[in-house]
Length: 246
Ligand SMILES: Cc1cc2nc3c(=O)[nH]c(=O)nc-3n(C[C@H](O)[C@H](O)[C@H](O)COP(=O)(O)OP(=O)(O)OC[C@H]3O[C@@H](n4cnc5c(N)ncnc54)[C@H](O)[C@@H]3O)c2cc1C
Image (cartoon, rainbow, N blue to C red; front, side):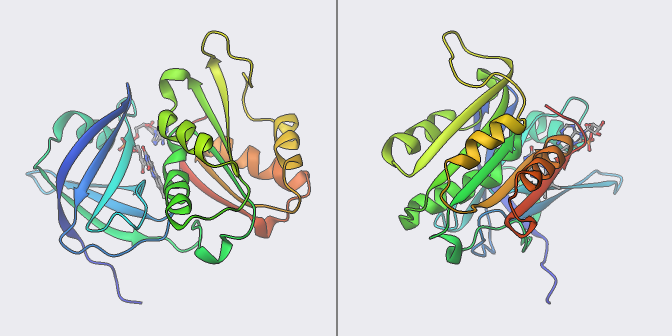
């Protein structure tokens, strides 16, 4: 397979999604349509030649041509995320290559099958690309997003997700708050656990395609529990973003 080349993207816009999360819209001279779930590699080069490279999932659907949205959480003392948050402005160049990844992807031939998306924190980013694409193609497959966040302030894309759930009777958004729920909240207020996954799986008449993304610990626990609950391992796709738990 031909190696994907590095290219210099231009930052078109920056949106503050939550206090710790920004979305960067990049205009790409060589834009290639992606599959929802794929990512780009981003490389920073210092004046002395030192380089740091990280992966960032594509948040936008392939219907948004010529550009991609990358949504980046600011990690305390994080080399690349803090530079992106504090040192990058619209108009700046950024070196990227992609789209990359062929396993953690939602393909159009899955559009008639039930879909279970489970995210912790910024793990929602590639799942958002799937939901945005699903809406664009008008898929009507039963779909649930179980989204674990610390507080209401950390729920990335919350307005858009709630809007999607309102418009689409086949899409259900389930939030769980692990640190502090908003006042009056009657939903889940704990980490994703077996009882929660049992409840969520009950909503499906047949085995859904499962996509689990977020901190390593959450992804491993959720994938193991889904498997214990009888979801075949061929139906569980995982993507680990980092070493910590929510
Ligand atoms: C395929 C893939 C897709 C990804 N997509 C996204 C995305 O869409 N949005 C996004 O924000 N991140 C995403 N990540 C994570 C991203 O690649 C970086 O790991 C993250 O931005 C931290 O890099 P950094 O240089 O800021 O921190 P580093 O300097 O690498 O690390 C600083 C400290 O933070 C810890 N750390 C590193 N990563 C994380 C993390 N994710 N959570 C908590 N602690 C961490 C490290 O152990 C270290 O102690 C993705 C990772 C992969 C593998």
